[in-house]
Image (cartoon, rainbow, N blue to C red; front, side):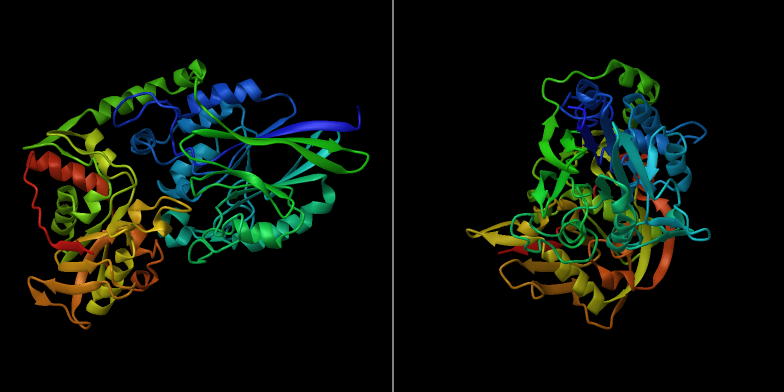
Length: 515
């Protein structure tokens, strides 16, 4: 029927630089990566398809870390891959800023796709920092509107220099404004939002502290006229409908493809959803064209990762993520030692990412990057004893008791895995009693055996994410900066290991986590 038009939306998000389907830690093949996703996309895409990525595309893998250290004269390899696959639109993610503007522009300036961005504005012109606020694609006479928006929580995480001269507007308010502007001009309206859901999609119960980092539920509940909300940021695998709005979220590291198929009736100006699902990459072969596009930089990355840098007496692998936190892993002591040595700070803190490798006896750069996976820089802040205690109580919320055993609290498992939220400190001694109520779990706090008082002052080194209040540590954000090193912690670790060669872990059993 001429007045019935069927079209398809394919959605990816949070690719985080994964192209080859091989683990950078084990080198084993898995069901992830843009090369495999490309094969799947090309098998389901037709001339009536819109292909959209919702951001966090160019940071997160050893390949992107290695490439960020090279001269940025050419197109980012991720731009070349997205062009080969044929993406129509992209949205900017918060992590896309991590390596600075020059690196980000090396991606955005070389994309064939249109950049949808209605709330990251040039501070002088008030136009989008890059791209367009909205667009209309016409498929067989059906007008499909598209809007892109990014979580406005970026200043709570990012180095100020990386977002300099960018005015970051409220994501919800910007979406509402743009929807009101575009709704009457189109037949079907899509919002691509680099952000997630702050509420349970069934019960509408608040899942986390409502900081406005994620406003997907607020958008679903309070903005009328959105037909399809594409989300990301939380790395969840979701699809469904709420308040007449279809929604998707396709996981992370290019593990899934969201597919939405719409049948639109031009006579009644109505539509029905024929499909809304997530496809995985099981039994999918990698697209050789994509592999070939990035083979040179991938080979260079692998060679770089295998560079030997030092030696320790025994393997220090991290095999149990919970145990590595309850019984502070020696690698934490090493990282904190290096941070304090570099800054002369009194106290250091750091956490472990969701998936970390640890070190083998012969340490390579692969081990270091597999253990400290973020492009964080080191910052020193002045902190009094009261604020230090607040920070420790906050990190102690990571644990809970279940059937008499210490476990990770549900809020750090759902809706998004946040094992990185737990900080471990050196330079002090303290006890966490998990059975106590929140805010009263630190039962002892000393430095060199002497009790710390509220008015005592210390220099405390940490990554820039925590320094800027990331993880809802707003009280740390307000602390005075003593030294903003602008030096990446990964580089500090590699330099220390290269210079020291034979590494002796200065491990201290200074943290007690008890029931």
